[in-house]
Image (cartoon, rainbow, N blue to C red; front, side):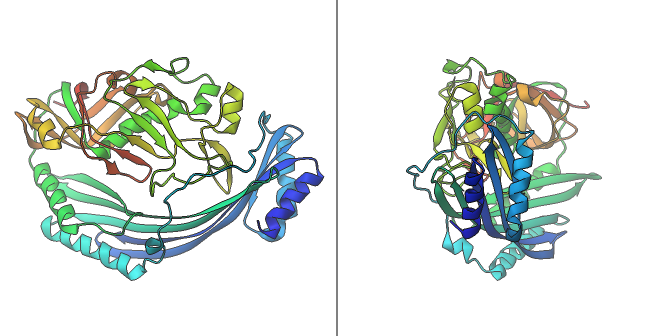
Length: 437
């Protein structure tokens, strides 16, 4: 505990308040390329603290980056408590924290020169195999030290490193741009196969040059992992404890009931090795854990922080999410969908006429809290007689995650790591696809 943190907690104690101080210190290094050329190299410092206190039973919050202005931050937090929500809970005391694997010295010490070389090499290789492809690429590594101390005697901290590659490519095909997107979580190891990456992209580009006609109708649909992320993420608002507190979730009163296909098992895993949302404790000091959301099609749990747990008569699941400049609120850590037993080749081979979706864009006018989605297929291909024959244009898919997940045709046998989401491809037998045909 630093002198500044101790000073804030002492001031709260003198005022008869309980308080917590959340501190973040770290660096973010980004190597960026635009239109196939090196664009920017940036290293920025992240340093600040957030003070949350319970003053006369109400929550107050303020944050700052200047440790010389502690009195101002304390005064601001006390003032906001005058209009703050009722707390209804106590801050957690010190507890045993789980072991996590979230720190990687090799990533922390990764030289910028290697990041630049890796990015430039991948762009060159993709450009050679796909003439005309314009690439925006970024490699970003983050090192963070987080400390949380409160009036109950809690004083805990952890170090964390993350690293990721974001790849966006634009290719002009028939006077229209086709968008390719790829992501890699490199937090475990800064290593990937550029040849395999480029060949995969070249295959997608070649298939995209072949137009395929698709009439509006209902079709079997395979969402590859990059598109399935958008589908699975529609679950998150419904299982958030805030939605239960506000009586806005379609899952209210349905815990321990079979609502989904038995193939579907989904976890909120706050201890996932090198997951972006992993940590030994959450934004309030509660131990993070592995919480089942759906088990074999049975809905099991909402996700709570201390406030929503108290308001609904539950216990925190260790899901308080925050940064130093924002107060905690409930949210997912890492969403993990257990894989099935299908390879992508097997799934495609079994379809007479259907759609293979690689990327979605937009949210339409969907009711997110109800699990609705209505999205454009920005990169999708027609499947005909067990083969991918070409790209579909101007197509949209719509549905409701709770309805379509009652019957899942299949799950892929391989998980893909998107940092805070790990999942296989998802396959459905009968989804409505709207086109201009």
